[in-house]
Image 1 (cartoon, rainbow, N blue to C red):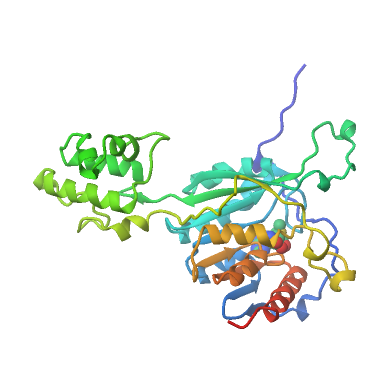
Image 2 (cartoon, rainbow, N blue to C red):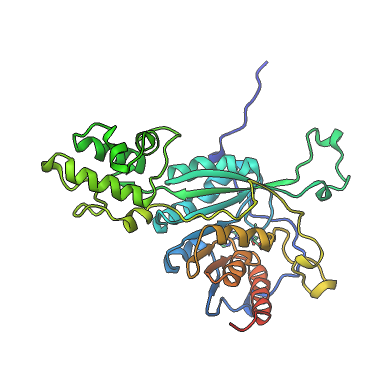
Length: 360
Ligand SMILES: C[S@@+](CC[C@H](N)C(=O)[O-])C[C@H]1O[C@@H](n2cnc3c(N)ncnc32)[C@H](O)[C@@H]1O
């Protein structure tokens, strides 16, 4: 007996038919294609045509296709997702810097399918976070003997950073190469940093024990290498290729991250309910977008990975939750939404929330 396997992702045709939307379709001719205020700039259109106009991102919040026909243009299953995301990921890589963090929202299998594409384009996996919506999300409505699996109450939000490279090497390779170039024994790195053995163990390790040297330690290594290293090879640990590297230059090679107190990688947070869902006709109406994300979680991500004034990209805007979060914590947001109905309501939401902001 032969068991037929599934065809590879690239041969799976992608669907362009989304599930029925709750909000009545808005006539595209009535929708203005752009809206902005002092902090946010959003456009109606395919984000692929917008990235080049947006300022350099410190944070990208991606909440696009899930392979569940969640909106028009989403694919029928996860096998179509790598092709769906690839042009976006390539564009993000062209505009990202080593300071940039990507928060990639998806289902667990959707993320698994897209992960190799992210890695191939220079995004380094940091952490998989799980949004646990809790049992309330299924409320006894699941027939497990029919679905034959445990009911799913989670979504993934995976943290990636844009990997810095110097001379084509990732930082841990570059640091070791530079130290070896000096002709000094590795153990001298400990002396340089004034530690017993931590510098060799952490900063020159080539495996998973490697740590990014804090900027003050980097400067100590740099100063020692340039003072004691083979004179003909100087400068050592130079980031611009001309002068020894500074603390500021080194710090800029790492994405920002400041962990909020008390959080782990499991976020217990109920699915959106009641007032949190943005509705068509105020509280009595229907929810506008099935995929609206919780504002508190998205704000937490943006805050953890950026500083005031930094730029947040939201390529798959929906109701522009990340732009709203960006504005409320004094970042700048750029968003795109391809569907005129969602764009119309997303802008309405931004306007309404803006009118409720306290005057600065
Ligand atoms: C999962 S929803 C995002 C929901 C959003 N995070 C929120 O909180 O409201 C994805 C959205 O991306 C939009 N979209 C899909 N492809 C797009 C593209 N190429 N450019 C811009 N928007 C796109 C869809 O129309 C959909 O509204």
